[in-house]
Amino acid sequence: MLEFGEAIHLLRTSHKITQASLSKGILDRSSLSKIEHGKLYVSHENAVKLIARLGVTEEEFEYFRSNYSANRKQQLLIRFFTLVDTTEKAKIDALINDCLAEQNDQDIGRIAIILQALQLLGQPHGFSRACELVQPIWFDYLAQVKELTVLDTCLLSVIIFAFDEKTVTEIINRLLWTIDNRFPFLKSLKCNLLTNRGFMQMTQNKFAQAKETLLQALTLAQENANKKLIIKTRLEICSKKKEKAFHYANLMEEIGTKENAAALKREINQFDYLFAKD
Image 1 (cartoon, rainbow, N blue to C red):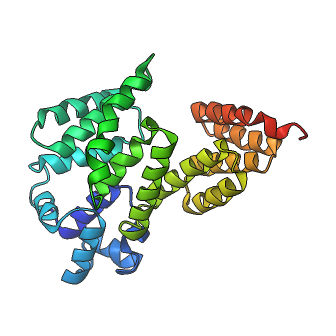
Image 2: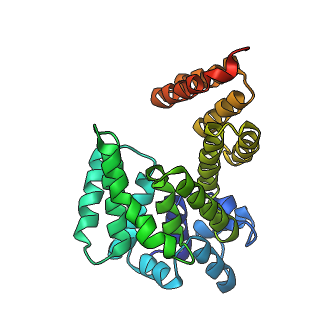
Image 3: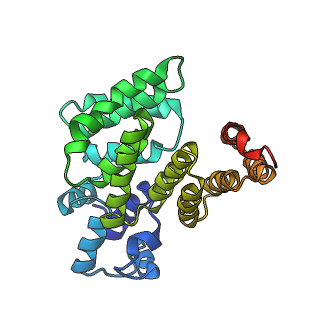
């Protein structure tokens, strides 16, 4: 059986939540660190708060803690959370197959669908098929759910690409409200949503609003260099500063993310009409 702190650490890191975010308003970060290392006892009240903030029920936490390998759903969920930001095809294929084997769990079924859709995005004519796969997750299910869970929130953020502008705006607004009011520790996800909203505002020529949104996102980017460079590039576009925008895009290339750099340069060229007098 896992120790309480060990279980908290595994769930926290799999959800990519910092100690500071998880502990905020409950206890100080150093105390959480000691708890995770088994050096400090945690009160029942604080234990309940930490578990809730991780987005699992007390029952799910105890299942996870009592036999990590036996709790199949938790294991698949953790594998999904660690795959969301990666393109490792072999691992995704393996996870899809394992998810498809869990035929009676709707959450796991939705994860399989989303992973299949993400793989289609890199294929010729795969975009429309990917959209067809994931759109029912919103229209037939999540749009009717009164309170989104952490899993619902993460799933929905991944499939935004599949919807029209009006629906995307509705989804982003709901996700931001959910994060602010229920899951404030999901700072990285909120940063992504604000970055996407800022770009949408740019495409609508609402550059003043876009700057405000992107500045909010920048405060949440923390130590993520890639996110900071994306946001700063877009801010320079909004400010009609072409050379500075390319400066940040080139920095992106220098740190080894050439695909992201190329995408940023395409964005700069997309808004070339802003730089007519630059």
